[in-house]
Image (cartoon, rainbow, N blue to C red):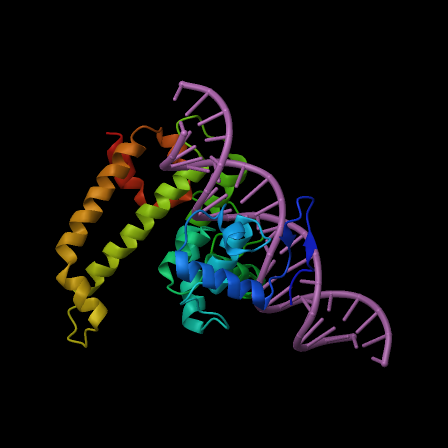
Length: 246
DNA sequence: AACCTTCGCAACCGCAAGGAT
DNA sequence: CATCCTTGCGGTTGCGAAGGT
């Protein structure tokens, strides 16, 4: 499976990668590491553009990448994270070790989206599909969707900047929530190694998260609340954000 | 068997952010 | 400060495989 091979006007090869090209790219990166994608193809003896090499490495060749079918647990996670983060595939991928953003995005677009729709759930809002929607308060994903298509931001910020900021906050909040979940769990149960590490470092982590929140707060305070409201990711932080403007 | 549709996924494209100069 | 370059991201496309008629 793949695209047909062709050459652009500069003689740069496009389309499907061969096993030999893969081998050359892996050998080069194993020897010299990943740096300067622009110069890498020439140095590695590949007639490809740097962008193509980067994509091939990150989405396919990089060690530890999990390929193949998504487990039901992974699918649940994607749906859960999508409801929180919207189409921020890179941010979702960060929450799912060994899966690439491209893989997650493909699986969402080709499978999960349709499955949700079939079961009567709007994949954008994650709410039951209604004949006419007159919701007064849109869900995060819905608000995010509209923000990217119909809002224009002033010079103080851009959708991309907000998304980046929001993704950072989201991931840190998730980490904090995880710590709290572990901490407030009153049921005596088996604690795995990962959780032990989390518990032992919780104070430092909360401190670090606090610092990040402070940085975000300072950045956000330079924008208007209306601008921030354009982005769904702040939906969950309404109270916190309003505090920034008091 | 032939044709059509849908699925799965690798790869491409355009754009924005951020660093270097 | 302006411009250029590199990197990263999200949307989209192309194409073989699989399934349906």
